Length: 345
Image 1 (cartoon, rainbow, N blue to C red):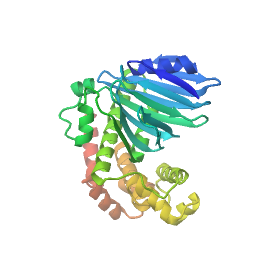
Image 2 (cartoon, rainbow, N blue to C red; image 1 turned 45 degrees about the horizontal axis):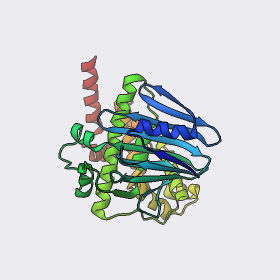
Image 3 (cartoon, one colour; image 1 turned 90 degrees about the vertical axis):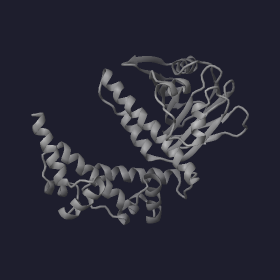
Image 4 (cartoon, rainbow, N blue to C red; image 1 turned 30 degrees about the vertical axis):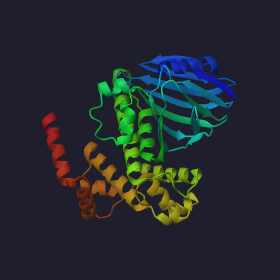
């Protein structure tokens, strides 16, 4: 096992200390720094961005070829870590713990340590990980962005306001695919320069908000990750959902999708309810309506053409459920859009 001691006072220093051990080259572009590595220790990249309001994003998209232990001294830098693994897994423990906690794929995790203590992170060899950490410096964040913390429950509120870093906190939450979709958006930003950074910063706010909302929901419902599905089965459910998303017009049946994915219908439904809080049928209807709204907003297709394009056969049914979801009928939506286009012209 390779041990890397982290004594840095910020995210950039953390990555540079990792670089000292695993090698590679750091390249900067538009405020985004990338450590690229391809050697006998690791293959992949570690990316970081720092924002003035006390947040930074640290992204691991890498495979370590030896077991790695990060020993993080919190005397100089002790942020709150909002962690999400969209691929692979890793482990964490506090200084006084003997047992490591596993950070699962698709799981919302929030961790912070005591000031002057140590955090231990572990990466297993030959496991590709894609992990995003939003790291929040509490004093600066509270000063710049947070008001009275009204959206936080009391325990998490206390973590943000523990400016002396006297407490440890660990939340290993339920699975959340909204975070996976937000992270996909974050990674696929194609714009350059300042626009790129502004878009990424906006998505960081959304990711942070989703972590907090998930935490509040889990605490309120006293929920823990609880499912009979294996990680492989959850991954299959996600692939099926992405397939539906890519072509909403097809006639999807629960029976056919279950057979195609090698799952029972019960497991398929359980997976959709866990990851998307919807049944398969509800999910198909939801993504069709989202697609319809986008088509109304970005194309010159009429309503009948859109109904056909998204796989519905009844215009009246489409209008009914569209209005129920968006509080406006498709025809009214289209009229408002046309009026806006005329004003712009």
